[in-house]
Figure 1 (cartoon, one colour):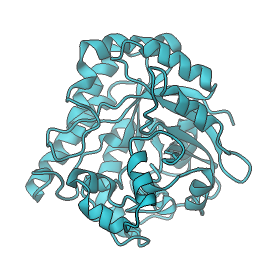
Figure 2 (tube, one colour):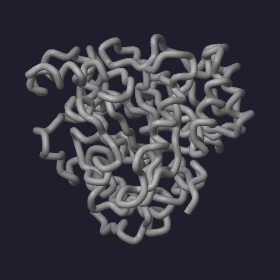
Figure 3 (cartoon, one colour):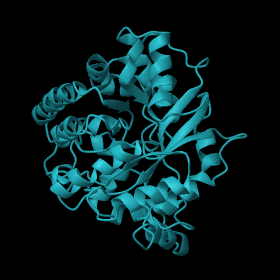
Figure 4 (cartoon, one colour):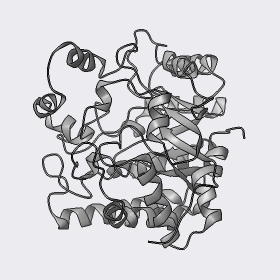
Length: 360
């Protein structure tokens, strides 16, 4: 493992989540409140949850509690994070424009001071919805830091891999494609989180709307690439190899679209097939580096250092790793592959600064 040092880089974490399930309406608020009210051990609750939820979250502890700027600051100890990008997560308020309330809520959190600054916000909105343009304007009115939106379009052909859309192909519907134009009209970006089989849909979207910046989250989450999940996904080395080859080829095709950048983030999500270690004992860095390096190096080869961004995906990745270890793994994989200080500066800072128009 090559020597790497991020201490002199003012890091921008391009992908974190903030939530308070007790005071804001989240998809998991009801469960969090129930766990707080009832004397049910969190590990018992984990055992009785649906399998597809267990495999996705790994450890529900973070979802059962608030995750706010001070929590992130503590988790980021040892990494010189200057600012963060908040990515929407599961806001379920009432009314057609309620999702803009998350943007307003995040903008009012105590970032700055002892905590990293809030550099940008990605809100939640569905381009297929008839009120999409109105919701975009409501997000923009809620905060000048809004830079784009993420839609819940992730769906997997294995029904036991947790879906985030009611059907597959959500990116390719006429309603979605027609509504997407409102992003271009407002100079906003699109945060594309999909499972890896849907990469061709992201490529088609980027080709249809070359004027819209598209950020691929988590290198498209190839579920089961490190171990079995769902009913049949990643069940043996042969299937995992097939998954890797398809992911590799589809990512290569997507990288040909100049309006797309990719995040080397979320690579420690349990749904990839990582074994979840006992709470408080993260997977060792050498193990993670050996496991995920082929994904990072291929992304580096096809996107280049100018079009990759690092994000911790905290607290979603917390069952597997720490923020410091996540950053170390990504930096080590890049330096082992020939990248140097300039490349790390781009991946850990300046690419996010440019993509999300974050002021110095």
